Length: 105
Image: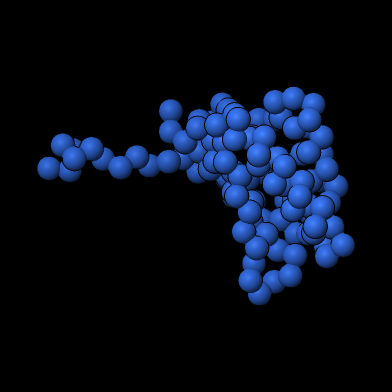
């Protein structure tokens, strides 16, 4: 099964930004043990605007299906308290593997 990626636009108030970043980085460190990666990008020209990218090794193991344990669940809840996340579903992007050299010939 191909890797999957989600991208979420997040808005964080100035008073919450330091704690939100610490929380999202703590979650990212935990997700690595489950074969996932979480990256955060800040909008250069828009205060408080971030993009959160989460990559999973497959769809079944992706973060969007819920936390693995109570600590992860607590981090996810705290993120929702600190920032504005979309209430609509987020598209899931699937990896398009590079063709093997034989297939390109």
